Length: 265
Image 1 (spheres, rainbow, N blue to C red):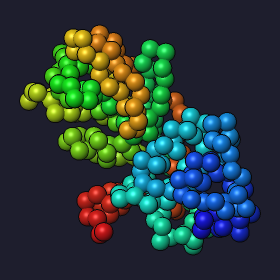
Image 2: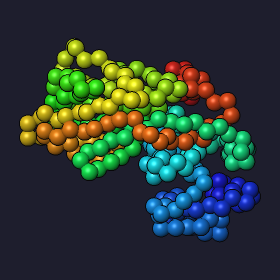
Image 3: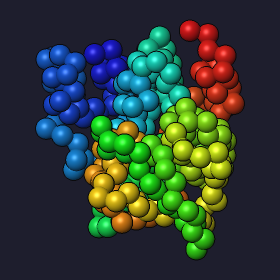
Image 4: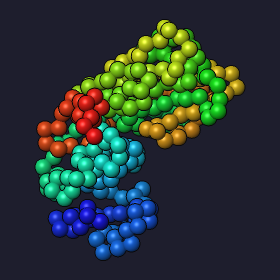
């Protein structure tokens, strides 16, 4: 309610989906916001996401394709993508909403799986099915095929996503200043695989060569169907960007140090 009250004070019109009213017990929100069944057909100037990085990613899943900036308030654990923490409400949020902020353009990965298309802010993951054994995945880039790899799966991450699942699987951290994507294997059954960083004009194909077994696909942690045996997933850098609201002067390396390498909390 504190955010809603601040927006009313600043004469900012708020649109609030019904599920958020129910989830957060905001029965009185109707006096401070326009409550709608969902946001699927709504056009807004700014999305404010209250939660952890997963919440911010879900906001981008709705708004990245239309270019709406997302402002994250961290109520989670790490909050790598968030602009402020809950202790910065109302003063820090007021400053951001009144124009005291920067916009960081984040690279996106575009996935095509047959007729299905999706955009990822963090990563695309091809993974063995729940309860299944390892999968055999082959990949190719620039017309060069690489041999099938027995593994638990593969992660293709953006620079922003390089601090997530990619990092936990031993992949490199990639500066947000780069328009690139990094391929990392999950528990590979070989000593030969090394993470691969691809440039903005390069595309990647991942082929499922596991006999009779479909691999699961996840986009930013959300289930996105399956990659059938013998089928290929086509991946490349998207032409559009996601727009993340940050405090003035925010720095990738300072955030990396304070939230990952030398956290204080």
